[in-house]
Image 1: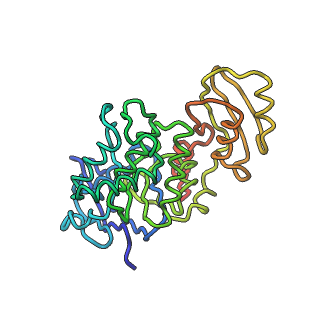
Image 2: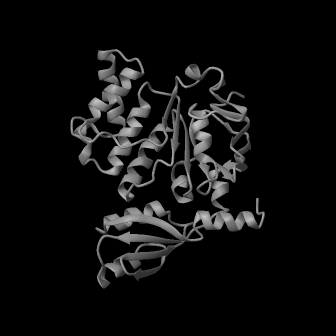
Image 3: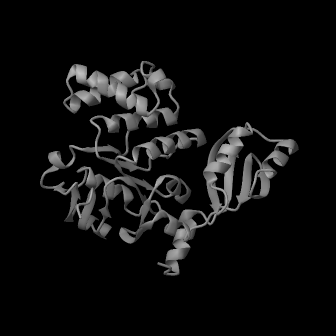
Length: 310
């Protein structure tokens, strides 16, 4: 079988520290594949090697069967990536920024104009194409990054922690874009948040201390990690009437307020965090973050691994 992304005994050392230890990835064509693990587990290093931003100490990496180390230009021709991308220059518009990247990719002027229109429509920024990015939200800036990665219609997208810094609405917008794209592309996305990955991915690869410990379908991985209490950082205090409204949401088990934070427990088998966020937004609640606090992935992950559960 020809894989879209494959690594062969990949090792990366920084001085005397082994960051990646014998990584063997096999990622099929089309679909969304999550690369899941605690911070510092080797996710970004893997992705930088796949984009030829780092050289492996040993082993090889392949994109669409082409060796990245030996034929980098050919291997990366059909790849778009978001890895450690700085914010766009605030006085530039999306049209100017995408024109710059398109020229680097070798587009001719008239061809580039049509390509910019195509990718900007995919990420739903058409109304803002000629506005300065300085006033863009974090979510809009990330959608612009995705548009840049989509120039040339690549087969493969490599996205490193793309939801960091996004508010709940930005996260939902990002998920919707990925769900549309994954039917025709191979998307390799890293995160340390299971509840984000489970919304969009078909398979998940678990990494710990530079070693791949499991690759499986998302439905099987979800059975291993369950978070049912989430912390929501609110913009304003909420009254008793609003608390009663929240308690009336189907499958909510408990509601607690501490300072400016709302703590919700719910049955994650019956309702997803994504649906809870949508319900809260529909109630008019404004919040900055929605994160697991009980058995969150990183804590549960470490406990699970210490018990050698995999």
